[in-house]
Every structure is written in C-alpha cells, then in structure tokens.
Amino acid sequence: MPSIQTTDLAAVSTESKLYIYYQDNTNILEASSENGSSWTVSSTVVGDGCKNEGSAITAYYVKCDGSYSGKSTVRPPKRACGLNGC
Image (cartoon, rainbow, N blue to C red; front, side, top):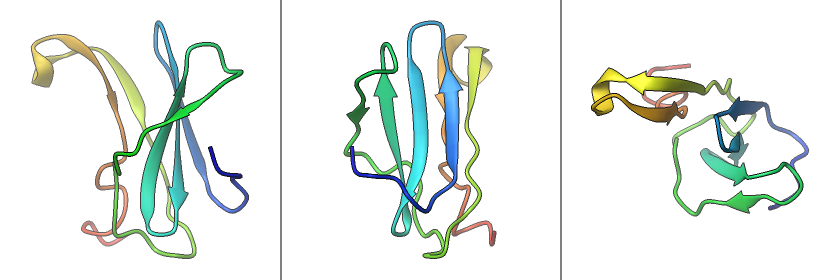
C-alpha cells in the first residue's frame, strides 16, 4: 500500500474486515485488512474523476442491504466525486 500523505480517508468496519478508502491522483481506491496490521490494496478503482487537490470521501456498511438480496455490503464512494459535481 503506498504512503498516504495528502488525502481524506474513509474507514469502514464490518463484522469481519476493516476497509479504508483513499484518493490516489483522481481515483478512489480500497484497501482491506482482517486485523489492521497488514493491508491488501484492491486494483479496482471504486471512484474516479476526482479533483487532483482532493475530494470528500465517505463509505458505509449495510448489514442487510435490500439492493443486494439482504446481503451485507460496504457502500464505497463510487460517485463521491466527478459526476455529481463535488
């Protein structure tokens, strides 16, 4: 995981994992951990088109998400920047 020096962070805790969302250039990326001591960075961009100088980041955990057949989900900031004009 790269050094994070100039970005907001959104942290989410689920029943089994920790997630951190952060901005790298104009993209929002995700890192996850089972225990908080070692982190795995996903290669999937979860948000794009952000301002180079930084954008607000939010994410949240939904235990029984009706949009996903009642499964648990983490709602990352897919449109936290770019298309909605923030």
